[in-house]
Image (tube, rainbow, N blue to C red):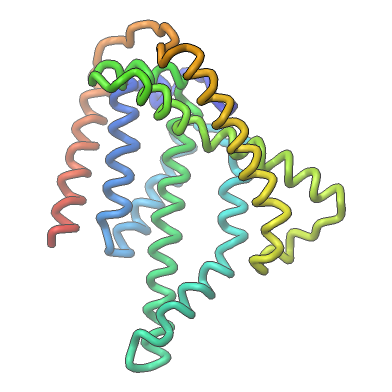
Length: 241
């Protein structure tokens, strides 16, 4: 796990506000088609991470793997849109634009998700969901989903070290077939972890782990919450327009 207990602004935010940050980021990423806005949001996210003193550590492995797959992703987008325009040049430009849009969207989501997860105790997420009267079983499932990326990073790192010791060359990852020795063990490990969590939840009868009541909303919570609400309204306006 990558949870950081450091006393930072992001760590001190109310758990409901953290959920709002994740939700508003997802709404913005998938509702905004303007590549300039997405690129600006990515730049703000990258600049905010060191200011908020979020240390990714081993979690950066997921970002690096995503970036390693960009060449193949770009080729796939180019091939997908190459014949959808009257000219090959037009299709290539559209493919590059769509590939860039997809890349920026998911980089924003990955970075924001990790920043929140690294600054949050999963029990805080459960508390936040209980406050908005989510069913207990769903609270546990969503808390598991929130912590899935750090677990995925742990498993990916372990598999990557094992494959490197066996002589795997990472420069050849631009070929889809080369991903199988990494992707298959990671998927199986995540499935095993999810199954264990499901069995644990079933044995508890869906009961939640007792957690402490969250603190009251502070001025920072209200400010960030208002910013999240404004971002959602702006994103819906962009999508409708």
